[in-house]
Structures are given as C-alpha cells and as structure tokens.
Image (cartoon, rainbow, N blue to C red):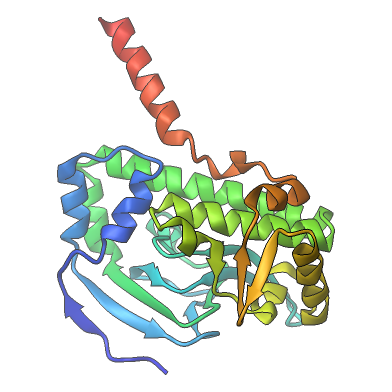
Length: 263
C-alpha cells in the first residue's frame, strides 16, 4: 500500500549523484544542481508497478532502497525480466527522450523512491553538458547490462546463470560505495531469484545447494551470502567488462592524453 508522498528538499539524492560519479565526471556545481532538485519520497510494496507500458511519465524515480526490475509482457501474459535495478539507479531516463514507456518497471522487494519532475531535470541539463553526458553513459551501461542478461538467460546453465547474477549484484552494489559485507549479503529470497532468472524455486534451491557445496555461498536465514567471490566468479566465468567499471579511469586517461596534445 502506498504511503503519503512528502515534498522535501535534502541530500537524499546523494546516492544518485554517487551512481553518476561512479562512471562520469561531474563538477561540484553539477552535483549540487542535482541535489537541489525538488523531489518527493514514495514507498511501494513488493510487486507494485512503478511504471507501466504505455505510460507517459512526467517524473523520474530514483531507487533509494530495495530492488526493482524492468520487464516485458507478451500478448498471452508471459513475462520476461530484462534487468535488475539496485539502489542509486535512475529508473526512467528513457522518458527524457521517448514519450511513451515501452515496458513495465515493477518492485521486486519493498522499495523507497525519490521522484523528481522530468521538466525540472531537463532545465538543468541545458547549461550542463557534463550531466547530459553522465545520463547518456548511464543509459549506455544499462543497455550493456541488458545484452549480458540476454546471454545469461538464453545460453548459461542454471548454476552459472545464478552465479553470474550474484556476481553482478555484488559488483554493482560495491560500485555505489556500499561496504563489502553489504555487497555480499543479498536480501533476495529464492522465489525472487527464480523470478529474475526464469527458473522455478525448486530449481533455484538445488542450484544454491550446489553453490554451497562448492564453497561459493552460504544460506543464512533467508539471505544468500557470498563467502568465496573468486570461486563464484570461476563458476560464472564472470567478466565485469559489461559493467564498464573502469569507464571513469579510461575517461581520465583520455582527458590527460588530450591535454598533453593541446600543450
């Protein structure tokens, strides 16, 4: 059930700024312009829709807590999840450039959102090209993640599929500055993992047990805890290239090279 929306101005958009800074350069002025956006907090229960296909969004939600996902529905009601969203992620940059949503965004767990008007965000983009670039880089990285998801769902077996997802969540959570333990404790149930991976809960249970037997993970209460990341990476044959975690370093090298040439 939705809680009332409270209009506030504060530093809660720090998480969003941190996400953009993980892959792009923003001046202090650019960062403060984002933090100064007028936003409202919205809390949704698991399985509630954040955006529906066909909607014309007027606001952009930022995920503050919990997990959400993008999904497409077939005419006969079949569903395919195409990406997972974690805290710090902008959920609808698409509406800056496209008028109508072509997919659904749904809460996987209870979520907290910071929602700001798209029109206000558009107004700060005009004189701030570095924010525009950060938005485009964010969109491109999400497209890269979607491509990897297609490969993961379509071509990997259950064991490597689950191991790959766990590795991805770990590195994405670490990228926004969460501590190592938070990135290794995944607050997702087996039913939720089954939903994400297109497997049955029974199959997930067997697969988690196999990962436990290899010493990669451990089940504690309803959480799956990564205990040996190297083993998990080996099982998944995981490469983080598609996450573009080195984009900022590459960007700095390019800027330094251009600066040297201009001198």
